[in-house]
Length: 118
Image (cartoon, rainbow, N blue to C red; front, side):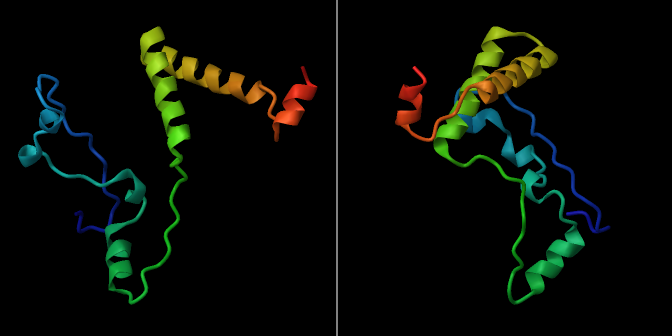
């Protein structure tokens, strides 16, 4: 923890791609544990004050998809991008184009609306 009250940085650990087991991907004894992205915006001083209070305050976080189907859809989209294009910019463009195309598709509240459009 940073005693100066400043924000903590999130550092990705180095991965061992030669690992035979997924547990060995990260060398935990030699890894400096860093701040989780969800709490990076909270300063150390503020976090310590929150812990001292009798009633821990309600924190607001960025919204992340937690529904399994939406997470699977995102993982599938990223996997498709990795398989179909090379380079960070191309992958980003591929993903953005796919998401934009999905937004332009018509949406229906029930099956009756879908069948009336056929």
